[in-house]
Image (cartoon, rainbow over all chains, first blue to last red; front, side):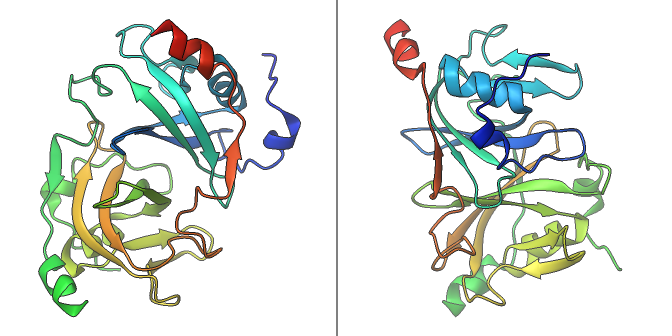
Length: 124
Length: 124
């Protein structure tokens, strides 16, 4: 595999034991958090240089360009590395549904019950 | 450690080898992605029930309540589990800076150069 990520970026990354970092995909204009996926150096390189968000599939052990199968493309608008170098935020224009279930985002379907929020708000 | 996360939630979680899942913290009203941290079952339980976002520190090997040291508290507004059960999105009201550097978010300081976005936009 030829990895061509800019060395000045690569040296700042803190990868997990599998050589990956989590990538949070966010709709650039609405702010919706769409999904979380994983990138290796090559996926980040492609995301930065091709205009299309590209991830590494841990289950399939291969790169995937978001939307190549589904048509639900993510056009890359901006990418930021976090303060620790171990997470990237990818701002994209998401065409259609981000989630394989057909939902707009992967966080739409399973809201968890929150308690204690009322008390916290009152304490502000 | 007494873990008291609702079993019906716990059984849906897909944890990594260390028993953790990534948690994306988002400002509930502006949509800003603030930071990514990690949760074990107990951290998620506390986040769901105390009104304060609580994480698990991989470096220190302990739970931390966001803001306990810095005052930069996260009041929990909503929590959602993703479609795969391996990531949570925590919508919070972030007091002050989310980042330990003093930046509002952990993604403010290190924008990566993006090329190819122009071509993608034209292809739309």
